[in-house]
Amino acid sequence: MAPKNSRRPPRPGPLDPEDWSAFRAQGHRMLDDMIDYMAGIRDRPVWQPIPEETRRSLRVPPPQQPQDLSTVHAEFMESILPYATGNTHPGFMGWVHGGGNPAGMLGEMLAAGLNANLGGRDHMPIEVERQIARWMAALMGFPETASGLFVTGTSMANFLAVLIARGQALGAGVRRGGLLKKGTRLTAYTSEAAHGCIAQALDMSGIGIENLSIVAMDEMQRIRLDALEKAIAKDRAEGALPFLVVGTAGSVDVGAIDDLSGLADIASREKLWFHVDGAFGALGVLAPAVKPKLKGLERAQSIAFDFHKWGQVPYDAGFLLVRDGETHRATFAAPEAYLRRETRGLAAGSPWPCDFGPDLSRGFRALKTWFTLKVNGTDRLGEAIERTCAVARHLEARVRSEAALELLAPAQLNIVCFRYRASDEANAGIVADLHESGIAAPSTTTIGGRLAIRAAVVNHRTDFADVDALVEAAIRFGKAFEETS
Ligand SMILES: *Cc1c(COP(=O)(O)O)cnc(C)c1O
Image 1 (cartoon, helix red, strand yellow):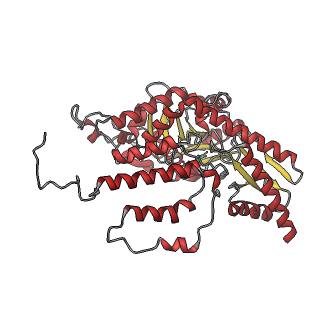
Image 2: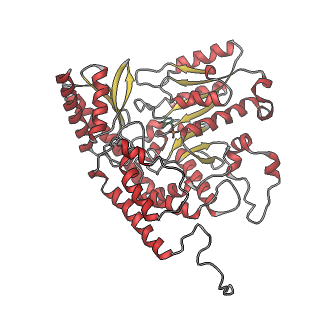
Image 3: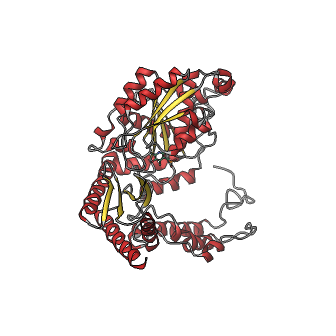
């Protein structure tokens, strides 16, 4: 028992509440409001434009004086919550956004309370992250020696993978001497369907965007293996050192999955690092109907994916899985720091997450992911993934049955692209009308040179009726556009 100290303040620190019971009551109200928001999401518009006045209301000088928690919360409820992206809403089908889940939200709340720093040292939160890496290795067919690391998203995970592949190709010396000292031109390969962050990763790594070959794709938007082999041979003939091929498991435009086994064969023959951008698609391993399409994923050297997309974990929760954990560590660990690590006490537990990436201070993204995986179970998460594909197939059938609409890309997975039979301008207008109506939020892309309305069903809440509503509203807005022009 600590001795009674009459001068001891009632709170641990000056930023803690003076009245914990009032704080508790207010905290419960905030939690209730958020649970009400989630439970009633269907009754709200998907998205609504931010009124100018609301936008302006935020622009005040830095808050010098304290305000009541309840006052700030009221401002959140009035000015922020109603004007969010809308990706938790079943009508959201734009880009590739996950819907989140209530258990994940509570996990995030607990993580914020714990305020753990997962850069390093010996504590249980890091064990949670390591356990998720073990689970993912098992699910994706990687060995137990694989390493895994939470990052912001797949853009960052892809970037780390490029750095690991660079070290594998040129040796650890590249970390000190840089690319120029090596005097070798490294070349990488991916397809036209690849996400823009692959080129950005080549840029940031110092290898350069021009050293990334964008290989042609087939009619299903998969990388053409013959074209890939030709590109590699051409670069070799010119004295370059091909080092990396990036396959896509779930392309952004149409949800195409490259022939991953074919890529693995070429990579092993050509001695290239085989990385898979599985941002949303890799978690398809949880769904029995999707898993066979991912054959070959287990042969990758590294996989980047997002728990915040098909995994429905609240943002952000990107992940990098690397087959050979030692190569991964050798890319980022600072030998001086690493060798001085303690073997007992809080400063033990090496290697640390900070040895596997550039971040030193790191949050506890693993906890909301752990809650999501455990509370839902991987079977139910897999069923939710399968359902998004079924909803997309239903949308495809609806589009095929409507004379006013034209299907531009069938549902290979969970993405459907179509257009109203009118100009690009009309279709862009229809999408903006859909957003502003609050009915549905698809995005757009270009397919065969024409603007497409693109519906990516990623959110577990999106149902058959939601894509029916999208189709009906798209036709209505298309007709209205024709009448006024
Ligand atoms: C979303 C996505 C990315 C980018 O991932 P972030 O988590 O947004 O950084 C990369 N590739 C593909 C195929 C994606 O769908």
